[in-house]
Length: 161
Image 1 (spheres, helix red, strand yellow):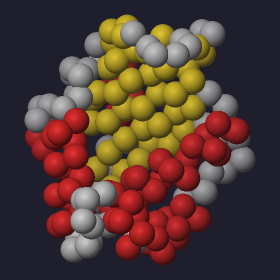
Image 2 (image 1 turned 180 degrees about the vertical axis):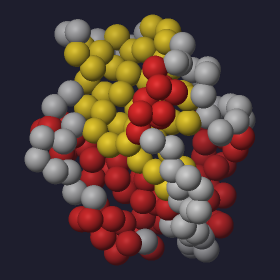
Image 3 (image 1 turned 135 degrees about the vertical axis):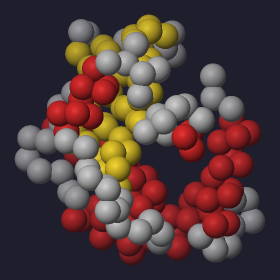
Image 4 (image 1 turned 120 degrees about the vertical axis):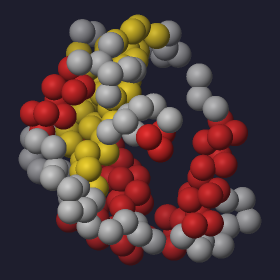
């Protein structure tokens, strides 16, 4: 279960840290202030034909993976997902760290324990937690509809990266 109050506190802190005027601390105001930068990122990182996923690195660190069932779904979902990742990049300095290989990241994900969880709609949700990453997969009709995975980091309180 997510700590909704903690999530909103984190959003408000992030908005304030970037000097965004927002009476409610909403990310909408953050996105409004950085609309040009986020649009440029979406354009530069537009999906390629046939693309169904993205392994994302920021400042030399792996920060997430999103995989969808088909290119059409990815093309529709990616602009929002990309904007979220691009928002995370705002204010970061370029990383001098050695970027982990995609193979190493996928091995890290494959080593995560997986547990089924109840869903509200169709399909079955599988949660990944422990090891060195966390996330979830929605599986419908024996196909992964959406897989999202993020590294456990000291900042998330989930262990080290």
